[in-house]
Image (cartoon, rainbow, N blue to C red):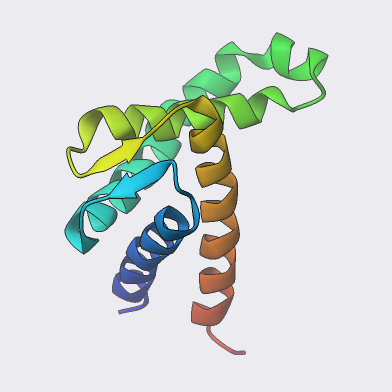
Length: 114
């Protein structure tokens, strides 16, 4: 049950982030849910490989290159989802930062109390 609530809240986070950023466009809530799923899957599968391959440049930039990888994941999802469009790299970077803040806030709301 908690997984379904987190999934639905991730879609809401995508919609809110797209509403805040004029360079990000989401057609409807179903597209936002698809974006949430694909961002999660790409962060689970593709991102670790990219982080491993870019360790030298990540160390050289003191970890800031990880932001580039996050933006690249958003642009990759933009390529595959028809109802989702990001106008460029900087909008993708802003989208990834704001989306992570919203997901963190929503994640705190769905934690079970001990």
